[in-house]
Length: 114
Length: 116
Image (tube, rainbow over the protein chains, first blue to last red):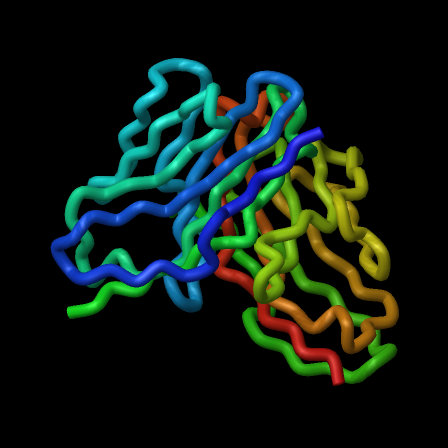
């Protein structure tokens, strides 16, 4: 069985400071992991994905995430927040060869203070 | 432009009045799926389709129907809507239906449905 837990429902940081959005997963086999971003009144857009290659994954807009199997984590980070980063972020896990088993986390709303 | 198009974007209806939310993609994707998004619950899968004439239930299929007669279209049908189906609905598609780990989901912009 697979599951994904986003540890924070809301994160607020100041512009120019680092961002950390936390995600833990559970999977009985090697998972694929994704982060998606949803800006207000928009659909979801892929930020980055992990598919068993390099454990440190770089995405768009300066975001990156590190797959840590020992900690079953896939946290999303960015060194310096920008006002345009304010959005909802979703961590997603899927099983190899199983398009049906795509599990979304409950989301983390990121707010950026000027 | 490659896109997933949903219609309508906003709809207010009454209990029991059948409605259809259309979804169309122009990327020749095999895989399509419907999700509903509710506060604090993330996105939950309603139905998905691996290819034409192949559909299957997701996690919350009750009260919904789908069909996949053509590759590009995947309408969501609410035969008798109820207030607990008030939600934000997303259609998504992917080129890799069987090996989703190498692909990504492309989302429509959402359809906000209110059932009174």
